Length: 123
Image (spheres, one colour):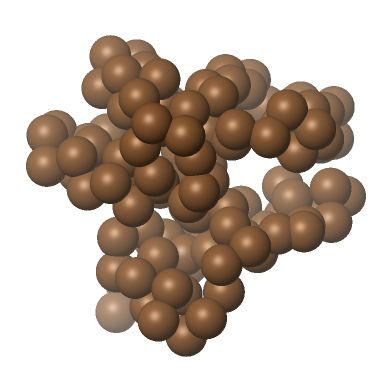
């Protein structure tokens, strides 16, 4: 899979990228802020977008809303330490759901696969 990882913390981005590339065999493209993430999401084709909620220049909710207002081609999964019921509800409304931080790098690919499978289930 070709994945856009939008994460402003370089340490978290490195861990996630290593997990996704080395354990999952995925192609990962990193965006360090919300504006870069939105620009790349709108100009490149990705299979999934992993979107941090708290980023500089534009937060993840706004990135997701603007991305989906266009012609979205990839599902969005949020990565966030924000995990109140209200936050989780909003992440589920806008995307496929939430992978809470801190996450287990050895489980990241499975968590993504589970959310992608859940998103393709027929109700």
